[in-house]
Amino acid sequence: MRKDQVDALISKAVTHFGRIDVMVNNAGIAPVMAFLDVTEEVYDRVLEVNLKGAFLGTQAAARGMIAQGQGGVIINMSSINSGLANPNVATYAISKGGMNQVTSTAAVAFAAHGIRVCGVGPGTIATEIIKGAFTERAGMHAILARTALRRLGEPEEIAGVVAFLASDDASYITGETIYPDGRRRILSYTVPVKE
Image (cartoon, rainbow, N blue to C red):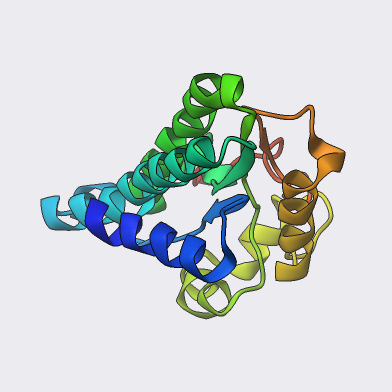
């Protein structure tokens, strides 16, 4: 992820729409591997896409919104893994923990400009990537056993939270990450126990 690419994206959006009111930082990768199997290259790639990309996107969007002088909303896609100790997705979890700090620090930095910065931290959502290798490796039973609503979330449910945060109905929310997760975070993870 390079700054010039992100700046070009924002510039193209402003050229097309005439302004920028909402930016959603949603790029992300989540390799599933044991902590000790993570290479330096994998670590760097995940942090580059998930964290550096969101940081640069937040900067670029804020610059455009400040230039317009009418505020705006920046929404960063985090994850329940930002606060869970799941060693099989360590780099992803680390990047999303950092994402929450991008959200909270940017919210303070840009509040005087009328720019709100919020985060959305989904639980396990029924996307193509989740329905494939991730659930095969993690096990659907193990995931649902840690989700109070006992089902995966749907992409539309996350889109609804994003739309709410982007709307005037959320005008007094900034610096917060909302977790639409079927109440999974409170159930946390388990470790293998010999019987």
